[in-house]
Length: 388
Ligand code: GDD
Ligand code: MN
Image (cartoon, rainbow, N blue to C red; front, side, top):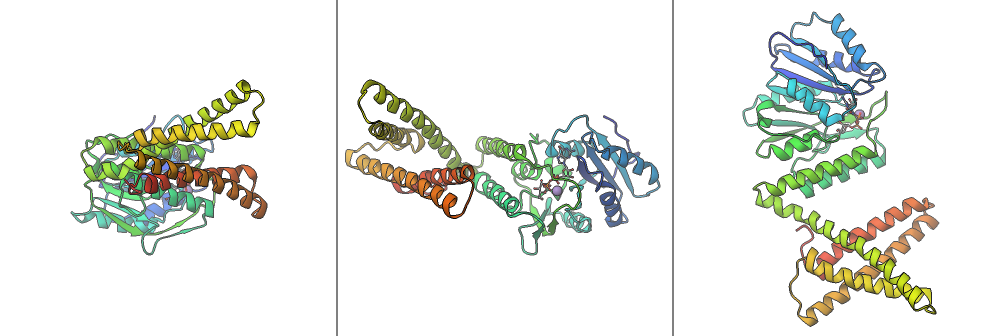
């Protein structure tokens, strides 16, 4: 790793992670230069992961040509491999000398004109973290597909419900904070969501959201892929465990929904195996049994098993009074069958009427019925609040 050091420490450090951004990086560096507060010593740190398109080299050449900036220095960290956005940001934070840290993307999606406002807001003693937000009044997203918007909303929803985060846009990649706020904290920096991890771990920090319009990049490609989505779920799970082991009672309550869902679906998976075993057993042992009868027996046996396991383990219900249990059993069987029906109907409608491709329709239908199955059984069969 090469790092060019500055002589005196800066007041504000701006961190720019880059991977294959040769078409954008110089523009954003210039925009940052034009928008920096004039009387403040600043440091811009590019964290590049050995971009094959030569982004790092471009930055180094640019650094040579602009040595003369009085108040702003540009530095680069060249990492050997592509280690992910959050870890790049964390690397930048670790070497930053500024007391105020600003993090932004390099692909011009984040307007540099907002930087002075963010720095100003942090001058207030009661403000620790500033989030440039797409989801407060005045904020917007331009140029994203419906699918990408939905994904962002879904991720935000999971963070709010699962982790009890109050910020409207905890997924933002554009934010600033006072460095002492994260002192003593250790970070996993998995995937994309550095801000989310900071918000969860610096839980007493006061957060201000400033609206902005996110404009999708014009040049180069987004690095978000299915691994990013998977990393996100992993990060949320880790933060969830972190919250559970913390001392915040409220937080613990708001997340138990997910452990119950986890139990419910583990039992579902075991049920599927039982279903298969029982059906094939009946077909082989009682050789003249019609295969549909075998299937029905398999379904009933596994659903009954699922019921008992869910009652005892998932919902920790210790009331075995016969009438009460029988009603629960009937509701459970009814809702599960309803779920199966909904699934079949959905696949039929999506494929036949909406001309959707079968695998996608199946995934949508299975997830809809799986989610509604859990939520409805929680609410109606076991009489719990949905979010508990
Ligand atoms: N060093 C490094 N290493 N940089 C990376 C890596 C990596 O592995 N992956 C991505 N980057 C850099 C990109 O070069 C870009 O500057 C920035 O991180 C964001 O990457 P994009 O691929 O453009 O992400 P996006 O536009 O899909 O998502 C962004 O906006 C969302 C909404 O604000 C990110 O900032 C998300 O975190 C954010 O939620
Ligand atoms: Mn982008």
